[in-house]
Image 1 (cartoon, rainbow, N blue to C red):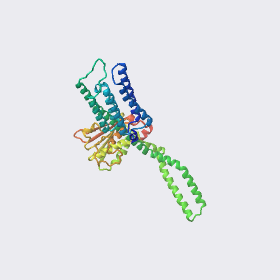
Image 2 (cartoon, one colour):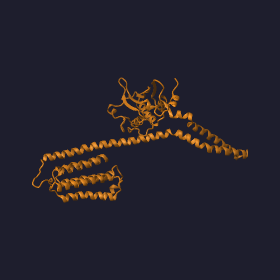
Image 3 (tube, rainbow, N blue to C red):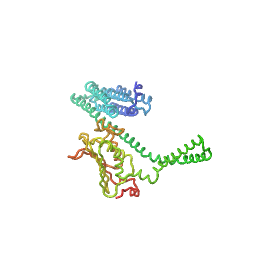
Image 4 (cartoon, rainbow, N blue to C red):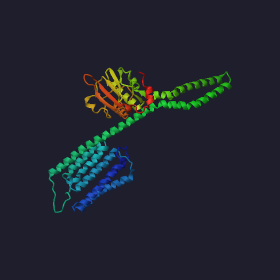
Amino acid sequence: MFAPTLDARPGRLRLDTLVRLRWLAVIGQSVAVAGVHFGLGFSLPFGPCFIVIAISALLNITLRISYPMSHRLSNSAAWMLLAYDVLQLAGLLFLTGGLQNPFSLLFLAPVLISATSLPPRHTTALGAITVALASALAFVHLPLPWSPDEVLRLPQLYVVGIWAAISLGIGFTAVYAWRVSEESRLLAEALSATELVLAREQHLSQLDGLAAAAAHELGTPLATIALVVKELEREAPKQGGFAEDIELLREQVERCRGILSKLTSLGSDGDVSVLERLTLSHLVEEVAGPHRNFGVAITVTHDGAGPEPVCRRNPGVIYGLGNIVDNAVDFAAENVTIEERWSDQTVEIVVRDDGPGFPPEVMLRIGEPYITTRGAGQSHADEPARGLGLGLFIAKSLIERTGANLTLANAAPPGRGAVITIRWPRRAFERDVEAEPREAMAPAA
């Protein structure tokens, strides 16, 4: 019955999850029916009730035999199985009092599962079916199991109230669960994008070291080739095409030596500190430099007491700051100002622009994934998540993982534009820099 649909494109919900939940329902329904019939001695259609429960057990066994535990259901298949659960519960409630049965509240469970794992249209359809069945059960059902010598008749208005509670509960629970699940999904996707960006930036930052290592490894075979070329020059004729080939080979060997010499210099002890350590001003200039040619003036100011802070090159910080400056240049009318501030306790970078600033309606949500105010055609840089609202979220995540605190605001009147402040405790900013290299990097007074 379900085989063609179960083999469709997999979704988020595993078959094993629904099977386990249905077993829990089968056990609970069996205990409830047996307890009412044998424990309380109330009269109810015991045989038909257990037939309805047995059908669910048989379905579970069939699914368990037919599919592996790790099988993921398509959205349509998951919806069909949840719709069956609603129909099965409706059948059991029909036999045991309809909405007068307190277990009618369990109508919420399948809709809740659908809201957390299926698209809204599937949840809407399942909710509509559930409300329709609850409406029918309000009027059409067998008597509620009760003592043989006493008849329990609940007022119809009370039954209508139960129907209203179930219907409203389905709507509220579905919307609430879908919203929470959707936010969790978007956050997980955004964090995955952040990890990809960080991995790319780390890969680029390692190219210098890889080049130096490759130059070191290639030095020995190149020296052997040069030695063989000298031997060939000594023994080969001084004239003719063969001599010209040897001369060309010698020139190319020397050229390769020059290239390897440059690559090797990247990994020398004297250059490692230059490549791996940056003063605050060098960090800001490296970030701001690529954005100076887009018709917007970028001004950098310095204000600090004592030696300038020094940090180890961090691809995540460079990417995050670059994204913030990129946004400021995009929205600025004429000027972007980057302020560097430091003291014995803190290090700050403040990025200001003279653009429209952050709109009030999105101010509180800026920095969340998939929240963007960027219009089409405002981009000039090649950024993977452009226009999806991921850029600032990724920048914020990468910078704050280094111990910084990033705040967003608009300039106080009469000023205009956005103001983004990144503040580190100085100890966190200089965490990976030894004392001696930091002193060597400090600028002369």
